Image (cartoon, rainbow, N blue to C red; front, side):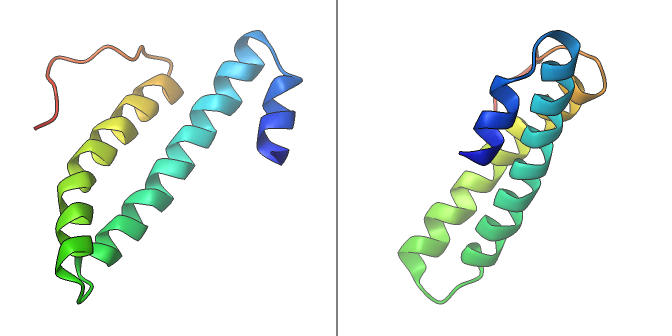
Length: 79
C-alpha cells in the first residue's frame, strides 16, 4: 500500500520512471523466489514455480525496456 500511495501522487514522466523501476525490482525479487521454490522438495510446487519463471523473466524484460525509455511491445510471446 505504501508503494501504491507513493505512485498515486506522481504523474507523467515521474510516474513512468518510478513505476518501471518498481516493476523491475519486484520481478527480480519474484524470479529469485520462484527459482528457489523450483528447487524445493515439493514436486507440485517446484513444477509450478519452474513453469512460471519464463513468464516472470519475460515480464522483467518488458519492465526493463520501459525503464530504459523503450516501450512494452515485444516480438514474441513466452512459452
